[in-house]
Amino acid sequence: DTAVSQTPKYLVTQMGNDKSIKCEQNLGHDTMYWYKQDSKKFLKIMFSYNNKELIINETVPNRFSPKSPDKAHLNLHINSLELGDSAVYFCASSRFVASGVETQYFGPGTRLLVL
Amino acid sequence: EDQVTQSPEALRLQEGESSSLNCSYTVSGLRGLFWYRQDPGKGPEFLFTLYSAGEEKEKERLKATLTKKESFLHITAPKPEDSATYLCAVQAANNDMRFGAGTRLTVKP
Image 1 (cartoon, each protein chain N blue to C red):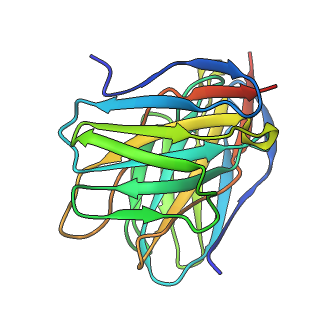
Image 2 (cartoon, one colour):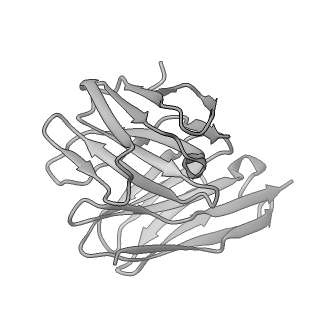
Image 3 (cartoon, rainbow over the protein chains, first blue to last red):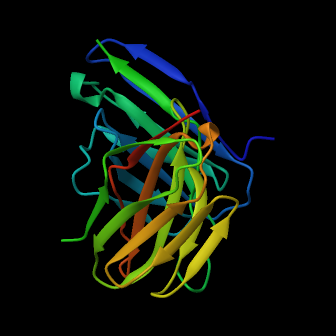
């Protein structure tokens, strides 16, 4: 009964390909996120999304696009993959609270290697 | 610009040797400060949320404290299973979330 799950766990692909990573949460949360963790282990937010608003980190290339078929899913599509896209990608989710403080719960990560 | 700095970068302790990890932050209006534990090959696991200066929270051998400029994660009598990377994150008033680079803790038996 994993709370936040991601598939695939590992993804090895060639430069120029298009790939998707799937994320599902069964916590009933309103908001979902995608993070990138680089080789130096910094976690950087890429997107946050709820059914009302998509917030994009301005540093994220437009080759990356989140797609949400429903409240429990937020998939990440990446077009024209580049070597620098190699990283671990984490999905997370949180519940909206009136205070605005959102504890985020993370998935296990998808390790992407672009050759 | 909002910033989160964690120190030390790595910490090696003997089992039972208590210590503290530091998270210094500058943020435009702190909404919350979070501590996570991350094991190799896994996603961050939530530990604590602190909302305001003076607040403290405890869980087993871990205790988190918060001031207006920094947070400490105190580890009392650590065990080898406490070995992990500990991440600090802050949520600003504009809801931006920023993570530190983490402290890699190794506890030797």
